Image 1 (tube, helix red, strand yellow):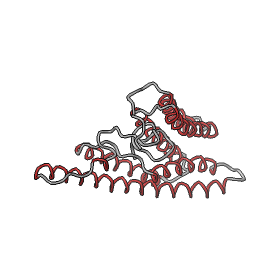
Image 2: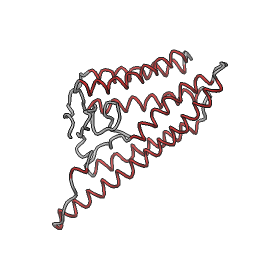
Image 3: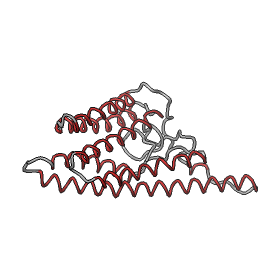
Image 4: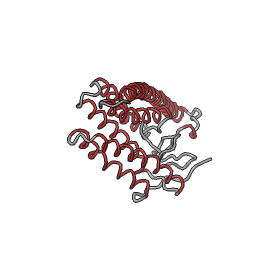
Length: 237
């Protein structure tokens, strides 16, 4: 069953929540690096996670799915992951190679976008592995901050934090592999369609293409293109 149409509206409640979450990114980085007020930084991170969940609920309940929200939502998540990692690396809490591994994956994904656009496709819809990876990483970072303090729970926080970080990193790359496979399939389908048009053969079924034209919406009416989870309808990996 088709979901509600994705709109071009800008001033919706989910979009405003996403904008507020983006405004919190430099505040979070300042609290971590300049003020070193980690508990306030963790509060900002917790509020960002709450707004991430809330905007998806509102987008579905109030039929406020939008293309802008589909961009803002994953952008905010990636920025929080990046700045949290940057703060942890500069503070010497985690090694630089963890940040390098995660950033490399995003660089490869971004490098694939022009290729997809060349074949007429927008950003691929987020898969479950990508959502799980983001959640694992956003759970890991607060725990790793806590592990840096001389607290009774520091050792427990360090073990659980690193477990989430390693699982999140593995899932992050697994999600990237799934995006690569999906992208190659879409490109192959497009080439078959072009060949069929040229030589008069049968075309592939159009319904199998979830990202052509950047405007698909899922049955839940998420805040953007095809999505499988409870957020606004993310359209990037």
